Structures are given as structure tokens and as C-alpha cells.
Image (cartoon, rainbow, N blue to C red; front, side, top):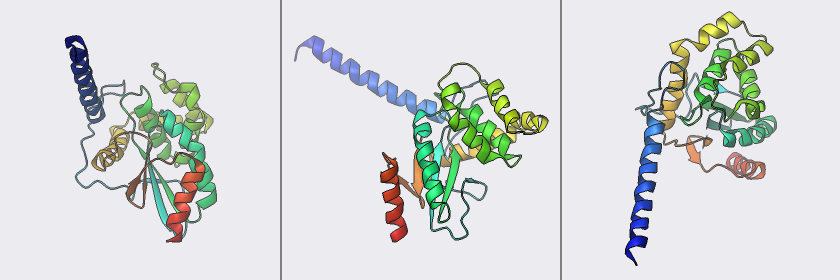
Length: 223
């Protein structure tokens, strides 16, 4: 191996190591995205996949299975899984509890703001409506370096929310803290990216298709 090639390999290893370290740092210490300060997302000591105040998208009378998604509304992968989850909800909503939990990634300019937007809507009993709105419009606002608060306020108006209450909630530290609680659970459970799914408390590999996810659910329900 000549000296130049050896130096290039060493440099590549160093760069890869730095990138991995930086990625971990960004996950644990998100920067200020214009939301009034970065989030402290150190791992929860009692991390749980689902809590009493978690947002349930289905509430079957007799739940046979619980599927939890840690998601980022700006994440393209989450956007791709959204119609799959919706189809599964329609098919299994009377047997399976589907839960959505916030995990905005620091690389997304509006991910944390979108989570607070959904939580502000939840304060008026409209979480699911805003959840659907953010995902169905993701291509219109996602992956932008511009601050999208006005866009999200527009969604709130379209949903008929009380705007004074919405604006107050969006700026409320307790709403930001609610998002942070989900993130802390996620970090404590080993979540490193989105989407991440847990089935009855067990983290699973993200299914590559509706058919794969359906087969997994059918297998668990048949046990």
C-alpha cells in the first residue's frame, strides 16, 4: 500500500468517525431552530414506549396489540409511512391501538415547530386533524430552511381552531416540554432516527411495505 493511499484511508476513517460523533451530538443536543431554545433530550431514566398521555390514533374497546411510532412530521420516511399507517389503522383500528409520539430530528428546520403545532392543536382536542394535515401537506413545507410558523397557523385556521388559544399554546413552554417528554422516552429506548416503531414495547425494523407491516400485525394477532 503506497503512502498516499494509506493517508487517504486514514483520513476517510477520521471523517467517518467525526461524522458519527457529530450525528450523536446533534441528536442529543439539538440546536436553536428559532423555537426559543434547543431541546434538552437526555434519555428518560424510566423510558416507556407509551404513556397515559400519549396520543392514540385508535382506541379499540379491546386492544389486542399496541403499535407506537416515534415520528418527525418533516421526515420524508415518516411521510412515506403515513399512508401505510393510515391503511392499517382503517383495517385494524378495532383491534390495534396505534400511537403517535413526537421525535423531531435536529436536522429539520421545522420539525420541532411542527410537533408543537400538533400539540397546540391537541390542546383543543384536534391532534389527529393536525397530524393528518401536517403529513398530507409535507411536500409543501418540508425540507425548507424557511421558518414555517405562518404556514402552520394557516393550517390551524383551516381547521377552525381558536387562534388566540393556538398561538398561546404554541408559545407555551409546557407544550415544548410535552414534545421533549416524547423525545426523552425515545432516546431512552434507543431511538436514533425516524420513523421508529415499537410493537407491544419491542422495537422493530421499519417494514418496507404495507404488505410486510400487515403480515407482521397478522402474525402478532394470531399468537
